[in-house]
Length: 390
Image (tube, rainbow, N blue to C red; front, side):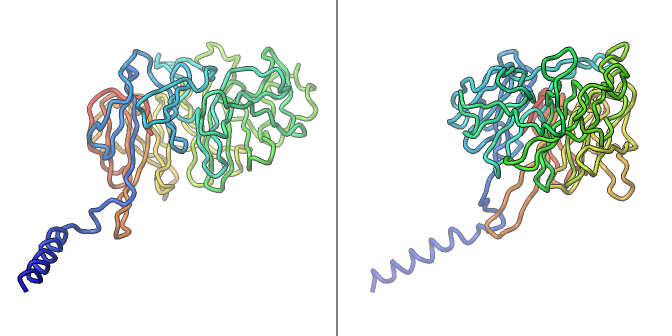
């Protein structure tokens, strides 16, 4: 009887010890947040509030993009680095990343951003921007892809254009479509933009060739080239005010891609002519200008959970798309003034009771900021000068 009493007492004491834990507080699928500072250090956090681990000490070389592919961390700096052990060690994955530096009119340095690399799990592919010319690919796109989550030495040239669409080779460079920015619409279409030549391309799946959806801008502006390349797809319209021959050259627009559901968004990273942002509902054939954006460089665009759309700027903070008016409006609650928003990321915690808490994060020149209400209000969680976040 004493043994039975002891067993019952132990049962109830154990039950009592866990009765205070609510299933809406037990995370079933925790997240990992990765971010890098302006000095080239890489850090991780599992709550967005504290640095859990310093993965890579600052080396003076700032990062351009971070991506997680399967179990690997890919990190774009002067070359592409890979970690296969959760950031304990990094090795070279690929050396010839595309480089397209420049300056906005106010002197702000512009380089390739987070959209230079994208992982598409459904296709088992990682795409990166590359400037490594492959002489065996007559229609080189300036793209490399990996089927092995970025494993070193296993990157392949994506030279699969639709020749009927007519990428063609003309002009001073050996290959005239060199993708510099990616985004994938919610319908699965991968869109690629060539900021060097202002050309818009898309890929519907890994089994379909890349297609161009914009008229040849040089032929459109230079009558001397109008007769070159009869196969050029002239059904689309190039993004406005993007002329590589502009004088001075810094006045030329330079766009990068983002999206909101199935709407393609192009933001002007230089914004010298106050082009702001444009959107296209036909994968880049036709464009309509958005209203409400400031005349400063636009650095990043993201649509967390496809519920809101955000643009980060160089000096004017954050802008949110008003879904009712279709215009952008400043949204700096908790961000202060004159903030530089380099990149945007979003994560979620799923709890055992099925509830979900969504988070949006900003990498800024004044630290990491977190929002728990889809970008309406912000709180600084980690001080510093951060340039990339994933």
